[in-house]
Image 1 (spheres, one colour):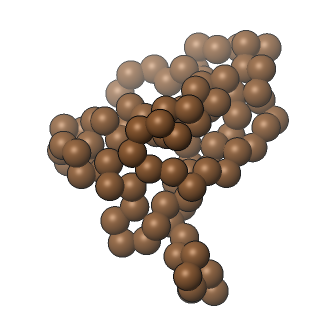
Image 2 (tube, helix red, strand yellow):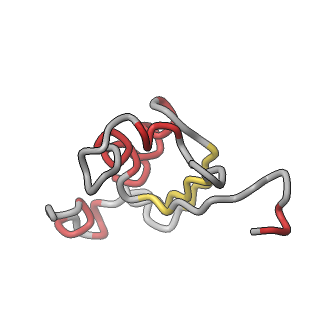
Length: 90
């Protein structure tokens, strides 16, 4: 595995450290924007739907059987699956 951005950035270089972002997102625009926030030190929680998650996971199967595109856009994020129609099942 390569070096993550957090392994070579000092805390002073992470201006959004201590900020938490919760995002309901998929595809390109929002995942790209929140990836930028994660790169700047924010804790990003990308909430995904159960049974499949973000459809970008299926774009290709290059990275350990999953989408390289998805991994590139969502690096540095936490990604729980939540069924908003049935929140008590989570």
